[in-house]
Length: 247
Ligand code: UGY
Ligand code: MN
Image (tube, rainbow, N blue to C red):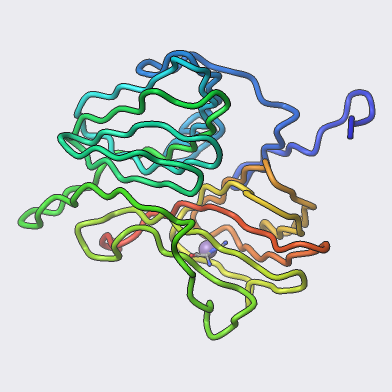
């Protein structure tokens, strides 16, 4: 559905943002070729991480050398070959990975139209703690657990929740009418991609209709709440920073 002339659902506020796909503009990102790449969230917005959406053409690829940056990735559609260090796998829709800081990784031989979301941040080292391991998995094969006892709101925790990992990547799926049980306010920051369905997201004191394709940034302590609406389940992928000291 086309929007009225001069309108967008996108809103960029000081401590949260809704980025609707109608406003996407591509950037060249070093390491990614043969793809349209949108830097949906990054430090220029006020975030402490980056959320990048890459849509690959046939023959496109991503090649990243080891650095202080760690990457969590999720294949929304399509498929490709993935390599992290010496580990190799084929990823299809629902495939995900974590490439630790210091590891080189690549995505090659994508099917045309493969959509991958990358969350990238600088790894926060803790002296004496070993580095997190590489992870490759398939969210499509995971069931999800009821969130705080509600079977209508199910959470898939994709990465190990152990002190070595300073980021989490999860998928939340809500039946129509299901909600986050309360308005959350927390130190963790979020980057979010709506994968399916629709609903209303509360961000601070604003309520936004959201649908598949929308992205959201929530700064630390941004009050947040969601209700799924419509006739099909709503699902979102999200990032958060975890497991680090208060001071
Ligand atoms: O993990 C979370 O903080 C999650 N419950 N937040 C959210 O879905 N906005
Ligand atoms: Mn939250």
